[in-house]
Image (cartoon, rainbow, N blue to C red; front, side, top):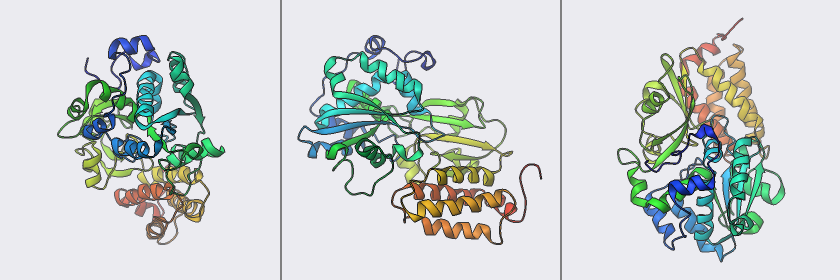
Length: 401
């Protein structure tokens, strides 16, 4: 069986115990002194949304550690359209633990924190059971923390702030967590899928990871596919697999597709024909002004109004504001209200043009990335769903009058 994150027992069967995990993959390898070099050669990038090179991130922490760093395994997954992290933790918790303990050894950490969304009950239970199976030395090193059910709770500075002060909202940077994080220590905040990949790379090598992708892309990615597809769920595919191939792997589209939301609520709307051949590869997507983000591919058909769907997402993101600055608290609120007026056929004169102007004014002015992420999604929607927005501005209203 090819080494993959979700290879092994059926993920629907619950968490894989330590005996099964080690029977398939062998015991946790000793941390090799050149692991950071291996990760840099592997090309592994973070799977939490930013796609930052993992090896470089680890080196930044290791250089400041002096044996007192912290590893924070981030499984908060507050993105409503993503289920990949909770699926991974619920089915393969020992892969995540392996990666986290390897990270602790590589960067010189004496504390490992598993930060799991409080609403992800199956994942939380699986991680707790898996920790109980581990040797006492690892159990003493680790603790499991429930993160609040908020969109911003998984942002790395918000996670650090929650652990330090009990409030999961982003902080102004610098200093960044790798400089001064949990309890003031250098802190490696790494997504759980990234850590699980480390566990496989340590066993099978950087060359294996580079060969697992397609058309020059490296590794595999976990993707949450939803919307107008026959079978919604989490798939593991080789990086470089196209959006269309992912949709076909999910049983195919339900009718003709109108658009795809790539990357989740902080991602981009793309016309279905534009998205179909795009490769799910961080480097290739970045060159085209797009991002895989947290691994979301959400398709909508022609029976769904893009303007109304965008209004729904904008209202959610405005409600999840960290409430720390005007662009987030007032700017997103105003944008959400304008979207809702349009969706309800109550748009004012030149409402769409006002949306474009306000979105541009909000970008880059927030205390954290929350306004920027919301505005990027909105700006892509105004491009892809231009016709729908114009119709709504003229008084059109979806659904019953």
